[in-house]
Length: 152
Image (cartoon, rainbow, N blue to C red):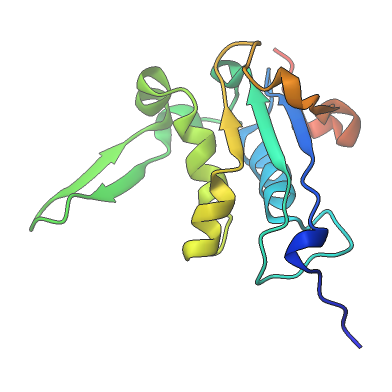
């Protein structure tokens, strides 16, 4: 028999990840699993019992290969002929955290639940953030896999 978790039994934790020299896609997969709650044994797809993730130093994030200049992000204004495109390089210069946020958003299922889960992602450019009071648990990307970090 499948056991379902109740809303009162949900205990959200806080995690902190340093994105310095981290690969965008690899970081996004780790973050999306945590905010969905897939790292827990009590995971159920229809409930939001994921944890909060604070990503710092997102301005020092990396892409592999030539994706930083060549990759394209498309969006539509809603008007005829209103397709717009941008590269990670241009997007990163204006909004540093938007590249990671888009990557995580596209790894979540579409719908209202995913929108709610995306609010658990907190992105900051510098090394300081206002969530120190929650005592976030630090996750070291290098220990998870050596490919997660690019050394120049």
